[in-house]
Length: 115
Length: 111
Image 1 (cartoon, helix red, strand yellow):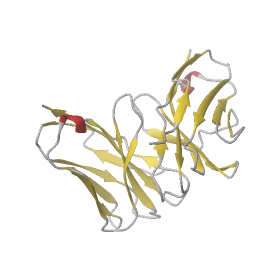
Image 2: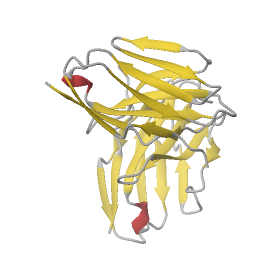
Image 3: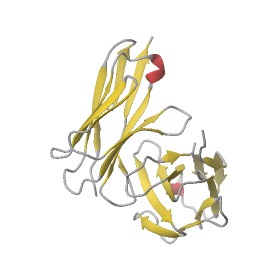
Image 4: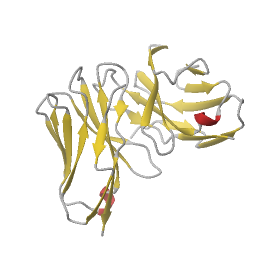
């Protein structure tokens, strides 16, 4: 069964450094998402992406965050200058349809630790 | 800020017990309600996407009901098995391209 893959599984970085989290969504899916979960808290929406542009973003997704689909397969999340509070598990997801019509398929996540 | 709440937070049952848990969500601007099963060290896996009031969906021994007017959904597991141990997440969609998740119910089934 096709799956969403994320790399790396764990990233440790120093405060102020840039990080890029990578995802390969399921190939025939058109909608892509990033969510995150800070330890002990709820899973939170960051951004959704369709047709090569952001379709929605949350308040968390400020100017320090950006997403890109540089080629036909990868979908990346960049954090320009990491802060301690960015430490979380970051999940990429994709779906065939948008607007909640179809389930999200999640990757295994990247655990980001900012020191 | 949308409030999606799940109860209980955690649940310990014996193998063979049936169990249920609740997800409550805003009753206005409803579009869809998702349920996911999340095993430790794995990715959340979709169980159901429910869109109609009164919907009832079933997958094996797991079923879910939906009441959009009062803003709740129940997830039932009949005859729990140790492999059902996981965190069960619900997520509310209010017609945007984003889901608002509840805090999850952590189920532990003892053999």
